[in-house]
Length: 342
View 1 (cartoon, one colour):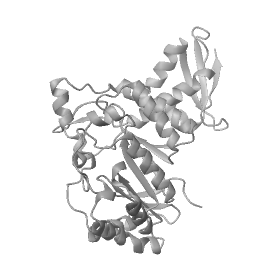
View 2 (cartoon, helix red, strand yellow):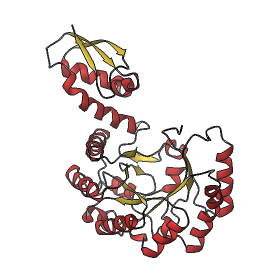
View 3 (cartoon, rainbow, N blue to C red):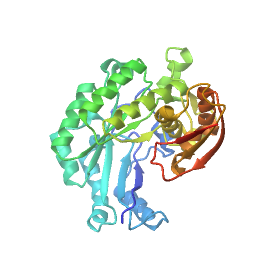
View 4 (cartoon, rainbow, N blue to C red):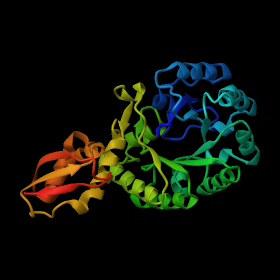
């Protein structure tokens, strides 16, 4: 039996292949990895290390993932070296698949065919937005049309398609980002990642923030936008596989994040917000009860409670009732609660 959660072995190539640095970007801080050229020997060392780790399991799907940079813009020799280092592990079924991330404007038919021939199964597009004005202000250097063309190309070559988006970019708004979400839904990707913009020290965006020409999202705004986006994507049967930047030692250093909706548990905040919306129909109206007890599937309890019990406070404010107890009840399906009114 294969575990539901795959084992992902990340190989970071910060900024490699990128034509320039975008206004928000500092991949070394995000990944806590130095900007060094990756080679085949290092890839093999990382895969052997992962193979020896306690998390390596024969029962899990095991994937090698190249993160950061623009993979398809690397020199062809480098692409062949990196993926060639992975190839023996794929042939022996030590690892099962490979994914890479790249800019939408880095792909053409030749590059797509090369990646496919060298064992890549999933390509994630760093689209960030589907609004050309937002892309222009962010100095991305590509358009929404480039994402559409790249998505079509990847589908033609049989790749799994991922799209990465960043709410809160310069010139963006909740309405514009919602339009981006709807355009991405029409592309029918296999997965989406949401990375709300945080302002990192030393970036162009940090200078704009300090001058007052850029205003990042508040934490509450980012949670609300991402929660709505997740609902839209998942109602369209498109899973959101990541919400918010992964925590790294570099990001924890004092002063590295100078603004924006940073929270180490951002994904949990969003999922809790979604959960709150989904259980509203099961709650009594304001003033209908003084005290309530809630029965809930055990795996949903943390979503109900929210970060530092903020979910509990929200329910009590909404119902004007005190929650006396929360009882685990795994006979209920996920996303359902039963309320006893007193």
